[in-house]
Length: 258
Image 1 (cartoon, rainbow, N blue to C red):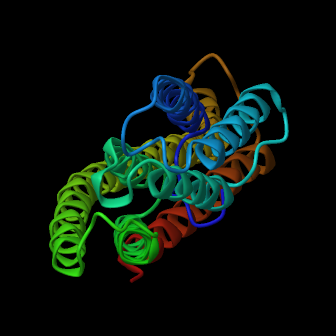
Image 2: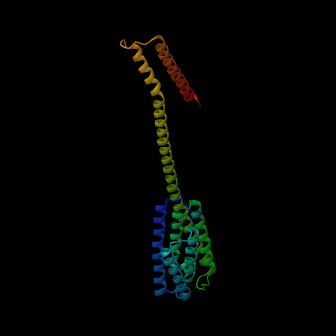
Image 3: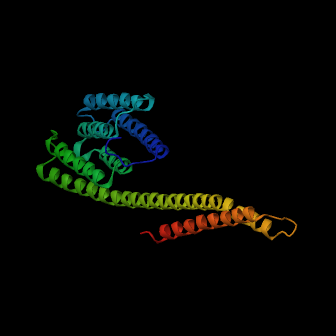
């Protein structure tokens, strides 16, 4: 996705599917506008028709293709086709200028906030160029400048507002991811703690059982041991005790380690 927000795969699919539906609606609206015709759309009706046909083909390819264009490329195509149709249907008076707001909104869904603001700035500058350059004798220079100022201000303001909302959503996703990572770390720490305790219990069981068994043997009046057997039993108790003392010392060192 190029410079897009790191969206989960399912969410990205929903976003792109929604954009496809919006694109279908926009192209249908453009086709109706050009087919019905208005005073503004009649001047360059052939050019508008060609642009709408290109937009329709592009929309079908985007929906049907398994190898989608990157968000950056598709946003550029959306913007280019929209601006061309705006120029052909009235420039500053075209009702299709509203489609630029949709492009800004979809940029906020697809990209990081700073990138969506850049898309809005590019859209505003490109629209200003369309309004100022498109041959429309009925529009005076002062009228064109007023249109440029008004539309640019609206688009940029809308982009800032939408990108702020997108930033809030992005921050929430980051906080959620951090919380998930912390929870996963706690679970892993608990798992490691359980493994360590299980290992300690496993290592302590043999010497403790040996000491217990030897002690019971030495204390049993029915069992008679000669001096050699008794000394061996006491030696085993001593060796197991030394093992436990060393084990406890090692645990203390680990516990006191930084």
